[in-house]
Length: 393
Image (cartoon, rainbow, N blue to C red; front, top):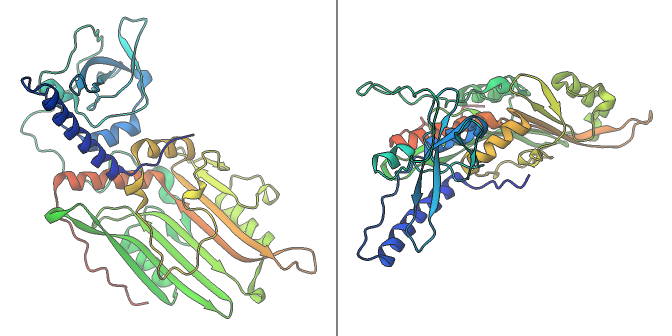
C-alpha cells in the first residue's frame, strides 16, 4: 500500500530538528521581526489520534501556521467531531473542503505533533471563516488529578490475547511467559534487554526471551518471544516457535496441516490450506485468511534455530502510528503464520515435515505498548525491571 514503516523515535528527532530550523530560519530572514510562536509538541496525543482518526466525521474549527516566510509555511487544521463535539488535540495537514451544511470538512491522511490547545493559547489559531454547528465539548475540571499511567493505552487488545503458539499467548506478562517456557524443559535460555528513554529517566525492559535446544540427533526446538517496550509491564507481542525433526521423527504433512486447520480455523478443510498459510484475527473475533495486507514478512517465514546470538530491534519502537493503524484495520489485531519444509516422500506418496515455524504477532498489543512507552517517557519516570537473570531451567 506504499505506507512507510518509519521509526517513531526517528520521527521525533526529525520533528525536533524541523522546529529548530523554523526558528533559526525565521530569525535570519527577518532580523527585526520575532519568529511566530510554535505550538507545543504533543507526541502521545498524536499517537492516539492517528489510530482513531475518522476524517469523515470531523469538521475544521480553525487553523494555524508553522514557519516564517520566505521559508516554507505549513498550515495545520484543528478538528472537532461533528456528532459528539469532541475536539481533536493535534492539528492535521490537509485540504479543507466545503460541506453542504455550511461547515468545512477536511481531506487528510496524517496527524501532526502540534497541539491545537497550545496554538490557541499562543493566539495563533485562526477561527474566522469556519462555521461549527456542534455541541460544546466537555471540559475537564481543573485541580482534579489525572489517572496514573496505566499498563495499557486507550486501545484494547481485543481477542488478540486468545492467540497462543504452543502455550505461549499474545499479551502474556513476562513472568507468565517465563513460567510457560520453563515448563518446556529446553536446554538453553537467554533474555536480552533494551533501554527506554535517556538519562536519569531511562528504564530497562526485556525485549526478547529466547529458549532453545540445539540439534540433538537431528532434533531441535526454539522459542523467541518479543515484548512491548514498557519497563516492568512487558507483554508478549510476537511469538516465534520453530521445530526441526530428524528424518526418523518427521511428521506427516497431513497431520501437521490438519492440526493447524483445527487450531486456527479460517480455511475450509485441510485441502484448502496453502503451503504457507496466514490467519488474520479481526477485532470482532472472526478469522480471515491470506496475506492481503502484505505484512506477513514482519515475523513470518522459517526461523533460524540458532537463537543464542539472535537479537532484533523492538518492533513497537520502530513502527509509526499510521502503520499501526493500517496493520490493525487492514490485517487484524493478530497475525498468525506457518511455514514448513516437507520432503522424503513416504511409501504411500505422502510427504513428511522435517521443519516448521509458527509465528504470531499482535499489532494491537504492539500499538498499546508503544503508547504506554510514550506515556512513561513523557512522565519522565525512571522505571527499572527487576533482575532479568534467567530462571533455573
